[in-house]
Length: 143
Image 1: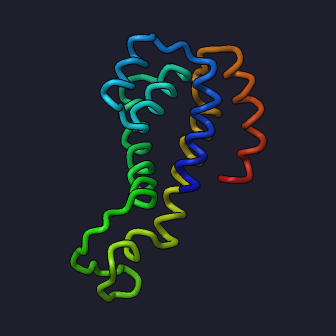
Image 2: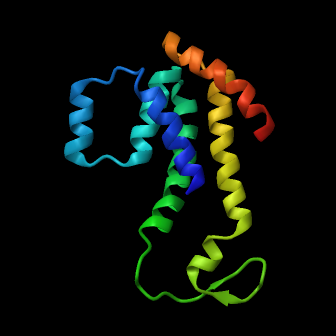
């Protein structure tokens, strides 16, 4: 959850400085665009990302939001036990999916996305440049 919330907060600030076409926003609303798609598109526009960079960002954001969705909207169906990689026993899927190593990986991925954009991105607006400059020092100790 923390990884997705961090990305949501970053996205929310960037979104206020990115001009999205009304047709795009309307299409998102009518087609119920996924959150990760919206976040990726705003960050792409806010940091002038190339297609390959956008593809990698989209894959990483999608994975972070997939785990957020599993935590917030878990299935109520009974499923066969999964092998827990550290305990080497069959457990309910939540115990295999939501463990410390995975949480650490997702949080680190979220931090890496934000750091990469702040440190190496090409902000498209002056306000985004200022915001990125303000974040750089505060993010140094998270690496």
